Length: 529
Ligand code: G4P
Image 1: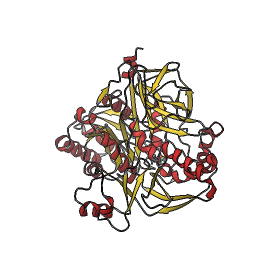
Image 2: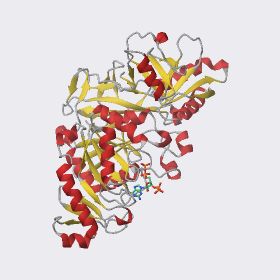
Image 3: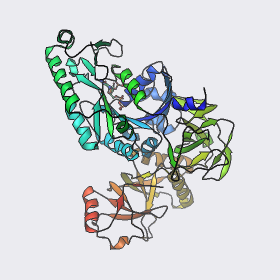
Image 4: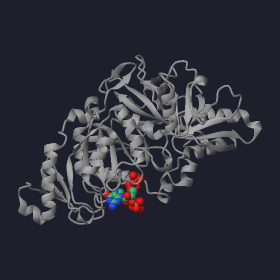
């Protein structure tokens, strides 16, 4: 197959959800369709099962959780699909956000009984910032669910996007009869509770064929369905593929991941509506993914997968062309030619060394400590530099100091290196003379990772005191006179290690106070590097 055809068949997307909405179950079912895994349960057998497959980090083993996001590739119907997993629960971190930078579209899984939840909200924000297509899978229809209208309305009002239900649920919970496919005009019948077993039948049937419908779903549901579809066709959003691709209209699917119901139609529609890898911006010019020219950017660095070797793996998203294992490439930020050692791809939990990869793919390469998040690697000769990955506002803060006063150097080096890898953000109070380091993280588990790594890699024990701040904002004004700002007494001024000014707030109320009392003050939630 030529490069163009290889790239054309790539689809790279992230799955986002609030914990427990069914992201893992959906991923697992998608992988089953692709034949990538043999057994359900191998994506993230919670707790114990995971120990057997993950050898990446001691802490990971101890806690039975995945700290960093992983990538899975599978083939289906001629497509080569890359799924980026975004970690949730306590392991929610800045990596979760960064992963979204490597995706061309996102699938948002929502629990039909709960609707939008806090983590969905945060992740959606990042996706919409990039204007990538967002597909919604409303899950767990086999349980009692909220009204589908209410769920649509919530998506539209909270996220400011249009919704287009590609299918529509017929009942829910014990009354769940299946979904009506609006394009095919057929019913996909959920005939009984068939945990994991595929006993789904599709019935092509006009909504006017009342007799067949009554036998299939009962009179009451048939009447409700006919009314619903009439209303949707008349008053709902029209399907517009351009709007879908700009992230303005979200195609919505109803189903039940656990019962493997509605997954295949979802996958088929998803593949037909999404695009091959999208062009990426590099210094005001877009790089064409179909160009023969290889280019990629690093969106994640996984440190110390093997403690004995202090190795790091840099994950890069290929933006254009073809990657070849033994070829020499150019690391733009390091201004150096290099061969990428041990290029690997992940298939479910397995890592395998690869010889080639194409635009849209994610590869992990051995990093001897030269890469930073956001760096570009490209063909030698002609250099491009992709836009950096933004730094996202941490939400948890702690003041950190070493317990052993002798270990000043190790402490400084360790904390700086870990911050440069992007696992934590560090701040200090300017002009106070206090040696305290303020650490900010997106997910609280990162505090434990920091403590663990400082101890095991740098031999430093730390004392951590949690701080009451919940919000941080970058001050966007040039040369701001922070001291003369009118701020609430619990707002704190800090700087990051690049010297940027930031404000720490304990509540949204304090942010509003700062904005209302200081004309012209501009605050940002993330920082473009
Ligand atoms: P997450 O990755 O988004 O955190 O969610 P995950 O897939 O782990 O699913 C969370 C729980 O919801 C799991 O149950 C899972 O079996 C269940 N679930 C997922 N999809 C459906 C669905 O369509 N219908 C129903 N009824 N349940 C669903 P659990 O009891 O927490 O875990 P487990 O013991 O089943 O693994």
